[in-house]
Length: 554
Ligand code: GTP
Ligand code: MG
Image 1: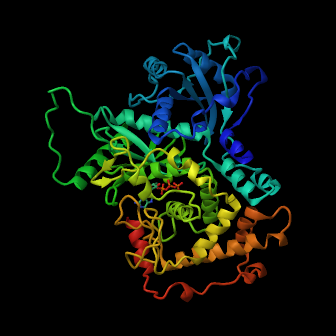
Image 2: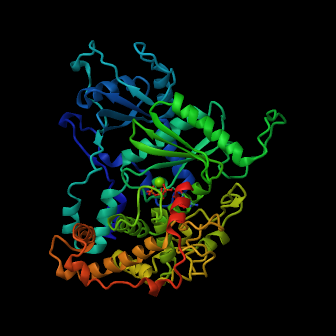
Image 3: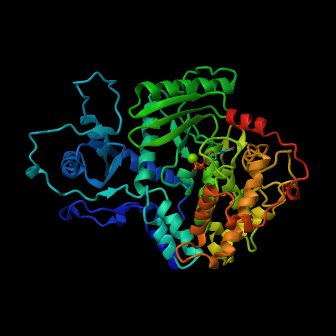
């Protein structure tokens, strides 16, 4: 309970007092949303989008001197409720939030373009504070609410915090708390969504940009990418409301090939991003992928972005993981520890290839928690059975994504299981080490290990598009490494009394990995029982090169 309290009420942001005289606000009002554990996904999206529509980002020369001026100028248009400071590369930036969307709209309407340079006269919430010599510093009131600094991207004392923890469970909570995507990281990603939505809604007024992936499902870490899907009609997979007016738009016929139509849209969106959208650089069109996307980098937020169209299954998948996070508080720290273990052991990779992905590891954690006794998480089948008519009904591209969207129904049930985070982490590693990957598949629909549906080394069923295997890119060599690394980690955690006080629990995992990489024949590693690939797999038909090329292409 003590840890739950810590987890719920601390944000990864550390308030930084810029000047004592400017400290007027407590930090507790920064993000009140996450405190309500019962809120559903759509409410969270609405809350964050509204917050983003009420916000602007201003590039300044000196944040200490300019914050008060920016606050003063903006206050002419409404009440400023939050002010954050962050740096990106050599840029100093302030993120300012009004308490109403209208104030931000009025502020943007008052802004002009830089007349000294030839520019595309497009509007965006990313502004620049021009030097104003006439403004004397004395006239700048120091009345601005709150300055926070994005200084937790490189957390220098994480090792110290982990070594001072009292248990592995406590280490897992600290790791989650310290590496979680910061409040400003959240806001910058939502502002990007809203910026793209505004740019594209000139063509399609109802269009919605919906973020998905780890950023919105609760598992986002600092520096995570921003995955976005476009809903052209704005229905977001829901039944359209009954139309009252007899007037409807004259039809513009779509191409008789949905995939080709989606590629056309993505091409046009990519052109808009590349040519007219402030901050969007390095625009790449990936039209041949199963889901065509445009990739770009946002130079005012430092975020890598992917924009897709045509299917919202990624959004509903993220919603499902978001609900699992709300159902049991242990889900997030366990996923964080597993993702870190995956990175420390080099099981996961930044670039697509034959390695297991964070998403696949996350589905394995869900499966594992569904199979505890008593179960900690419900199966998707249970959630589908309990779905409420209309409220929970979602459909995208002929894929039914209907399931109960109220976490409260399962929150009490998970509490019957009292296992600690440490127990769960160790048991998860044991599950990986002993699972019959050769014969069985991982499916969170039923939580049962069904026979595999194809001959790929790893079969993790996509719960929404059931004919797809999200582990299909993983080749035999990589899967074997996953199993061996689980065994290594278990050995290290179980022999931790041999390690010094500053090198125990989770801390021993990356260090052991470092030692092993520096000296692969290190004596420590030789003590770890080695696994025989033949114990695991009866056939060895995997063609690594084909798999690698296939993964790259897809
Ligand atoms: P990180 O970005 O690594 O923090 O995790 P992530 O969960 O956001 O993964 P990623 O950005 O690679 O993918 C974003 C989302 O796309 C995931 O959350 C899934 O919903 C979906 N996704 C990722 N990989 C696959 C896959 O192999 N198959 C399918 N069907 N969906 C995937
Ligand atoms: Mg992602």
